Image 1 (cartoon, rainbow, N blue to C red):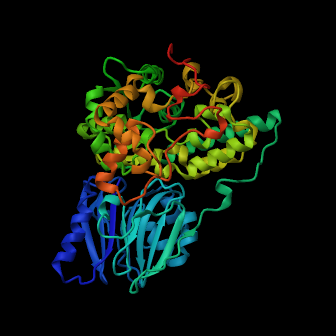
Image 2 (cartoon, rainbow, N blue to C red):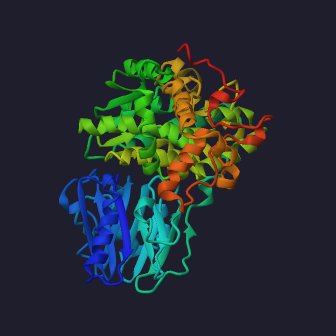
Image 3 (cartoon, helix red, strand yellow):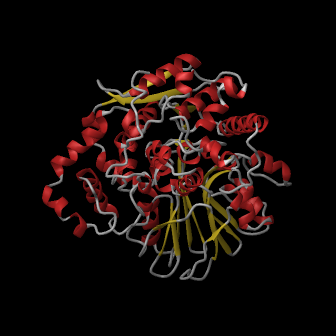
Amino acid sequence: MCGIYLKYLQDPSNPKEAIEAIKRLDSIKHRGPDDFRYVIHNNWFLGFTRLAIVDVSERANQPLTNPFFPVTNYIICNGEIYNHSILRKDISIKSFSNSDCEIILHLLLEQDISTVCNTLDGVFALACIIEDKLYIARDPIGIRPLFYGIDQFGYITLASEAKALIGSCDQVRAFPPGCYTCLPLDTPHHTMEIHNYVPSTLYNPAIIYTETEQHCIEALTQIRTTLIEAVMKRTMTDRPIGLYLSGGLDSSLIAAILAKHAKLSFTAFTIGMKGGEGPDMKAAECVAEYLGIPLVKVYFTSEEGCALIEDIIYQLETYDTTTIRASIPNYLVSKYVQRREIEKVILMGEGPDEVAQGYQYFKQAPDSEKGYLESVRLVKNLYKTDVLRTDRTTSAHGLEVRVPFLDKRFIETVYSMPRKWVCASEGNTKNLIRSAFDPKIAGCEKYLPDKILWRQKEAFSDSVGYDWRKSLGERADKLVTDETMTNATRLYPQNTPKSKEAMLYRQIYDRWYKHIDNVDKYWMPEESWFDTKLTDPSALVLNCYNNSNEDQ
């Protein structure tokens, strides 16, 4: 992971302005502990903190500029461009590094920014100067974070995390995923047009399969092949790889694909509560033993977890309840990995619960079309929830996360299936993905034991230990008064906290981010699908949940 910061300096010769910009870049240095540098070009401060992953030499340090270009050029990009080698061959370039981000400069000399963004296969949040233009763009899902604001003089300011912008802009916003803007360098940006470049086919491709047995086998083969490709392209790294293994379907499939197809060694990590671990750790042990891969087990106590609440909210920049619950175990295992000083790239299984309707509440969908629409809504908002969690809990410890299930080709492949194939059936979810890796159904080789392949979906914040959610609630009960809850609507008319736990998180959030609205609404199952009012996002409170995993 890396961090970027861009700011227009009114007087570059004034050391106070430059020092202030350096301090703000330093506030996100955790994202890139390997290098820290900046350039000032025509009043523009372009700063970068680097986690060296691809081409770890100094020549790939950012800001990058190509001295062979006929025009001024600079780029700061927090990203990984998985098809950069292919693109290098497609266009004749005089390269100065092996950085995967260098290719973006070359493409922008020949193509418009929208075409470039759609050409890139990867994740990115970037700012690029070409001659007298400033280009800003973010990947389609928002895997890499990007925030912006307009300063008092009307110029845009950018940063990888909102905390670097506090106090320097009137309003801080997330730069929307799948969008770009092109701005003049030398005039203020009071009016700024942000354009979407993502083709409609990502979320609504043509349905290319019919409900015949032959087409079913072809579709399952396509799902399997696309996911294998998504995992393999994310092994592009010059640093060691690790995997967070919960023992659920998603991370277990990534482990199996790496073990079968990748010519590299890797270590898996799992986490659970000390003395009261949930079903995840047992399932992770089963997967590791079956695949013959090393597994490191990390334990934490409720006291250790609860002590991190403030730090987690500071890092996350959100008060969403379920995001915070799940982030603390992720944060703790990332802290452990950082101390090992071995792995720098972490693969995680986020994404298929949204893309392939994996949450328990999808069993309640009235029909397949409504299930599909809810899936699309969740994917488009991932940058505020699970993607946010995976980014911040790893980048806080100088690690880079990669999420194969959110590969844009994999997403498009799933959405190209008949709606009925994707929706929950026979008491389980994500059956399309499960079937694609089941030899009895798809005719493929065996990847996982059946009890893992067909294991019921569990929320990570529940399955690390069923007492974890209870511990957080008890902590909140001690710190939030009944009087405060009585006044909850008056205190917070928008997104009113419904529990003391939610109120605690909101109060802590306001210490730093009171004037930044990063939460449209709390993550919650689609309430219209239930007869009763939902007050907690946990799957454990849903009437469609069962405890079938506890004996596995």
